[in-house]
Image 1 (cartoon, rainbow, N blue to C red):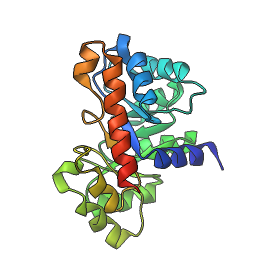
Image 2 (tube, one colour):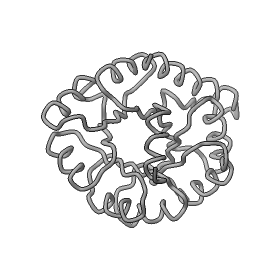
Image 3 (cartoon, helix red, strand yellow):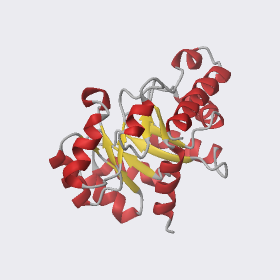
Image 4 (cartoon, one colour):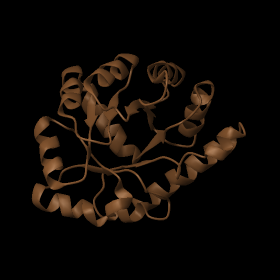
Length: 216
């Protein structure tokens, strides 16, 4: 199994990717550590943050040998993809479909997860070499949209993100999701503001429990 295949398997086995958006740089390592201690294996740092590459490198170093996989989200162009991969990102996500981003990921052997909504976007993404499709924003279309995409396209791997919570995560897995992405439903921003890493850990653990229950 190649490294890229191993990362994909780990992301799918984990079932949930934590979207760490808007975290202050001086708290990012502590937050990422607490979320990982809550049971989340896959961590996404968003490329629209200042000094994102530095934060990816810092988190990657802090969680080295823990089994965590560190990725970058909101990667909108090829230059951003190259930057985050150089910093250590093992998977790359985007809210949109940019085939140049997929090309960079494929050349570097990094998992590519572009954002799609329509069957045309999904088909184009898979043809371009995407590994998993990020259905975004999932709250707009709901769990049934997974089947609507897979119907004509076959068993394409879909990861809904945006609006997935502990209350509906079971519906997304029942509909055929291979994993989900979650931000504020998983990441306790109030606890982060109060430097309460126990609170961060507990909310992440609650989401992981919901995912595990949904997949039983």
